[in-house]
Each structure stands twice: as structure tokens, then as C-alpha cells.
Length: 390
Image 1 (cartoon, rainbow, N blue to C red):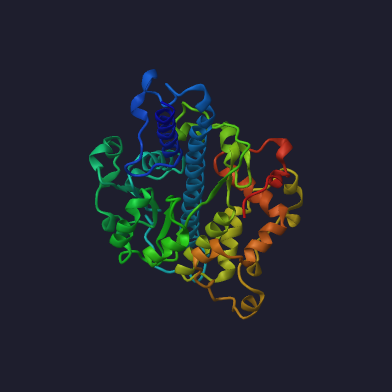
Image 2 (image 1 turned 90 degrees about the horizontal axis):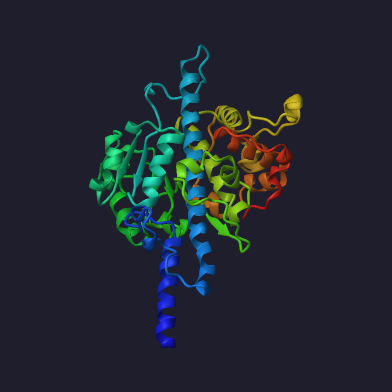
């Protein structure tokens, strides 16, 4: 009997750990259980095993943080494209921008995987960026299960190469077992400028680079700490949760709240991705820096607004070596950056960011502002007191 009891415990814990992983296409769906108490995940778990239930809250926290950071990234890219359009159509357009860019050059987002994560991500992007329905498409093995999205005007189908041909940003929300075949399908169709954003935590970015033969990849990494406090709620959907100031502040770039910490190398990858987009448009590096400052450092604390000269500004040597910066003429764009290398190795920006708490504070403040919330007064300007994983 003791052996059988142990086996049942192992089975329950394995199911719990499966639920802890962020599910992708084909992942576990818990929404269908609704209010049926006897079918709830916690039902029937004995008292001695209930200590493991924190994994369920951690799973939800991971989902919320992942969707929040993807939303911030897409907001940033949308703002960048609006800046391109405004400067091109102004009376004094930026020199160096490519001509012939259509007025409807809006961000096109593709999602591979229509499981729990793929659907939550689609809802968040639709409502909080917001991405227009015609600019969001989903490729999944079961498009017929995405009726709610098709009614909104989102194209849902099962044709990964077709999605890649269309998208500017491609989110991978599939299972690790599906990834090799997906990469084989799409690797020859990926344009150099297409940003692949992977949620497949089990596949390292170096491996993903080899599978895709592509360098323009972002992959957020999250570290879970032992002192877990479940602040993530249980009943709200992810979109509603991200409109809760307490939960949203817990997703901040340097926040350890909720027991989940973002590896800040992701933020480096985001900034270098923006520079790559400017380089693809042949924009001189000085104008690219100007845009980056406008996008990320134009929102200030109440105190520092009185003394704007003391606020941080991005400089050329923050992103490239001193030797390279000295030899770069004013009209030259930035070089093309390998985003996988940026997230795996030390960069000039790594050193600059870790040394400047003022820059950390401003970036955190800008993150919150993009969601329409303000940090509590006691967190200004000391928002970077939390330690982010490096």
C-alpha cells in the first residue's frame, strides 16, 4: 500500500509540474473546468501535498509576466513605427530614411501556437497594445478551436511558412517537442529583419539560433526565487490582471515581487532590436539614438523634470565599443547586431546599464507609463532597488 500511495503522489506532483510550465499549443486547458469544484485542480489533494500548490500560482505569475513584457515590446515597436511615419511626413523628415514606406506600415504580429499561452497573448496584444485585429494572425494545428478570435477578424489557420512571410514579429508559443519541426518549416522563409520572440523555455537561445539559422531572436528568461508570495490572483484573466496596478508593478523590469525575476539581458535585447530596425531603414546612428531617447527616456520623474540635464541619455559608446564608435562616421547606421549574442554575452550596454541606477529608474518608469500607471511615491526614484537576474 505504501508503494501505491507513493506512486499516486508522484503522479499528482507530475501533473502539478506540468501545470507549472507555461503551456503552448496543445497545452493543458483549465478554463473548461469552470466552477465545478470536484474537477478543480486542488480538489482531492491531501494536506501533506498542498505545500506544492504554490507552483500553480507561480505558473500564473510566469504567464502574466511573459504577456506583460511581450506587450511592452510590441508597444515600443508600434511607437517606433509611428515615429518613422511622423518624421517622414513632417516638413523636415529625417535624412537617411528609406523612401516609399507605405502609410499603413503598421506592426504585423504572428503567433505560432493556439494553446493557452497563444490565446492569452493574443487577447492581451489586442486589448492592451492595442494591435488591430487585421494585424494579428495565428497559426495553429487546430484553427477551428479559435472561433472567438476569428469572429474578431483575426485570421487563424495552420500554415506556419505563410505566417512567417507576413509577420514583422513572430511569437513562438508552441511545445518544445513541436519546435524542431516548426523551425524546419520556417527557417528558409525568415527575413533578416523578422524578430522571433520565443516563449519555449526548454530550448536555449543558442539552440534556437541553430534551429532557425537566424540571429534576430528574443527569449525572455525568468528566475523563480524561494520566497514565493502569490500576488498574481486566481480569477481574473491575464488582460484584466495587467490592469491591476499591484500586479502590473510586480511585472516591472527590476521587480522581484511575486517571486519571479526577469533576466535583464532581455531588456538589452529589446534595445538592440530597436537599433536593428533603424539599421534596416538605413538610418544614421545619431538619428537612431535620438529616436531611442525619445521612445524610452522622454518620460521623467516629477523631481527630475525640473532638471532635465541630469537625466540619462543614450550615447553611441553605450552600444558599441569605444574603438568602433571613433571610426563611425555621422551618416553611417549602426551595425547589424546579433541579438542572440547580445543576450548571452557582455555588451557595452551591459556595463552601462548595471552602473547607472538613474537609467534603471527611468526605464522602469517608462515601462509603467506605457501601461498607464505611475509608481508609488516611495518607489521614486528608488525603483531599481530590487535585484534583477543577470
